[in-house]
Length: 180
Image (tube, rainbow, N blue to C red; front, side, top):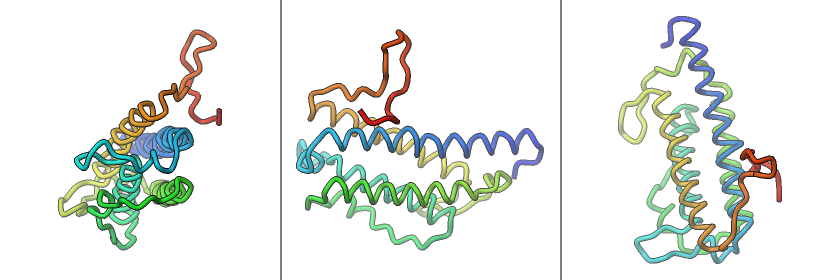
């Protein structure tokens, strides 16, 4: 457990940044992507070895729920990981995004209640003993990686610029939080 005030401040800052990345950076970018393409495009695959955007969204939701909501928050772990990749039936974009939003609301609630002095507690996550801070870092970096894949696939499918940045002032300014 963090022992002094500076360690507690680092833990608080880490938790706050993690919440911010998940809720105000990755989620809005995924939402922008899904708005740009059809339900069919969300579930399209380049081949059986590839995942669709829909599969990636189900996977992100399952991973975050397992590691944060269950692993840290104590909710029952009911994840069936392989089903996230096996899903082939079209789930409408609105329903898919509602699921992801619900999961991230639960994740945010767990993280908002996480006391900084607990970040070095050890728990079992997917059969491996890790610290809570390791689990949060895992979910954030995992979200980052798959958000990048979703962005790339969306750019390829839509053949358009997703306009995540406003360059009108000559300096890039984040623009993914506002609707187009």
